[in-house]
Figure 1 (cartoon, rainbow over the protein chains, first blue to last red):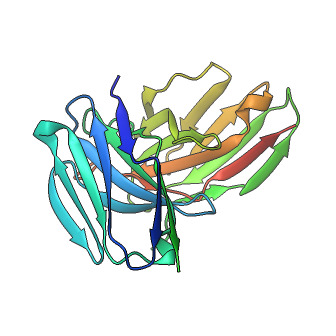
Figure 2 (tube, chains in turn blue, green):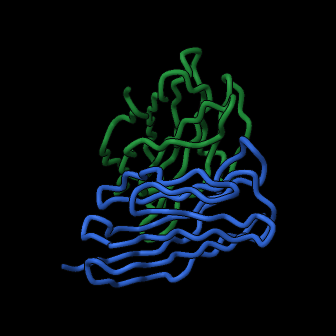
Length: 109
Length: 113
């Protein structure tokens, strides 16, 4: 099955810093999503981005499907950005998501 | 608009017991999926349903079963609970037609003692 690797596993930042999270996947995908999991366990949708580039406020994401990776950019980080960020992919449209192990982000003031 | 809802929020069961978890998808979504997340790991796929039919099953034992109802809500059943079944159980819904983006509910935290 598809393998999903996220890096780095842990990231510690000062408020205001920028960061880049990476997601590598081992096969072609038709679905790729980025999530932020808050301390209560809720998975919050950040981007649905099987290919291309999207931006939403301080966050942006790029997926290069031909090279099998996706990047999540967080600019001017805030303490509320802390939590675990997951990348999840689907091998075929409509199939289940395969999650990476996540990147744990800690932002201090 | 209401998001995906799950019940109960928390549950404590004893080894060997049975549990039923419930999920209501976003209005208009016809696909529901279930995931198990143990502490420190990413969610793992258990089942996917679309239009009341099973469309996918993950690598879980037969003690796990699910179904989808005509109103597209879903139940996840786990029999003969083991300590290792303690986890956060997440339900996700997707419109399926037009988009396969999945939206997750708040989860049910199951503790097996």
